[in-house]
Length: 233
Image (cartoon, rainbow, N blue to C red; front, side):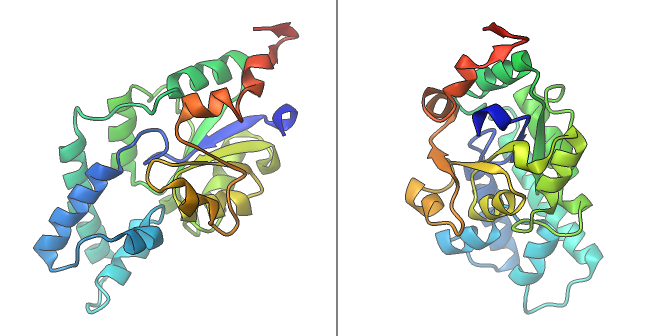
């Protein structure tokens, strides 16, 4: 696996950072306003990683929603997230070191996210990663959202790397299923779900890590041994 990796694909929410508490707070505020139940773990397992346009018709199943209705409701909820998280976001431990190492080795990186454009721009700006993640594939720009593989395949295409030569990082079951379906070596990040939940995804990730320090110390140790232009670094 290690010698074949030519590109790395990251999910964003819960994968670059542990921001799901802000999303949960935003959702519960939104839900209370609209008479919806608060989030439960089972609801989150179904929702996390999916597109708003796939989620909101389910949430408001007693109402007939037009595409404009869905867009308006999604904008309302996502704006709450951006307000709550402004100035409060930080990278998962080890991510900066991992990105630096990948950069040294010339391995491209990309995002494969279900987040809308405004959230992508907000989150990358807050993290100082706009330039590092110049390649972004969004689920609202492909035919099918997660757990379909479309967004991961698009990320690979944008990097000009075969999907089977990509390493993917994901925090949600739907994203793990999508990355595996794309043929990628997949690492689960246990920020949003406990390890046993991720390990029982069908199919499961190839490994589960707590953060990127954990990854670099174990499954990613090969990066420390990889060579740049034939010279060990």
